Image (cartoon, rainbow, N blue to C red; front, top):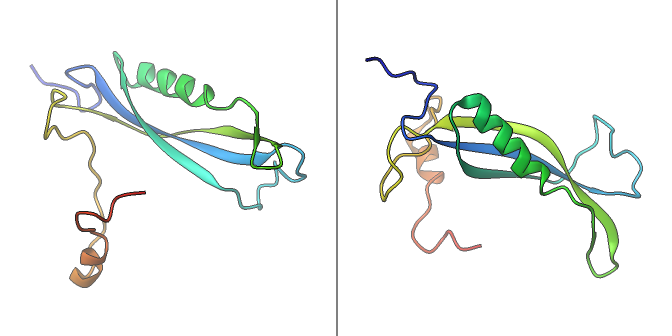
Length: 125
């Protein structure tokens, strides 16, 4: 039996979605040339296929778009759901060391590769 690379054998998918931050009273919130702060959030979902995973990721993203009063001045702000940016099936059981994501990169110089890695203690936010 051949497994599809689009189906997660254990039912888990990792997906990311993009949220854009706006101040509700600001003009130009739909200006395609304007710059916005964004957050790309990554979540795990249990799903039967890519389409089901997509629907679940959209639902999670939309749950994070309720307007609220932000900052010391209580300005009306909101995250706007822009969409799903990535979905990958997870091919292994979820446990320590299970590979859940991967990315392929263009060839880079060794000195630049080494700039992209961090040491223990450099991950705290």
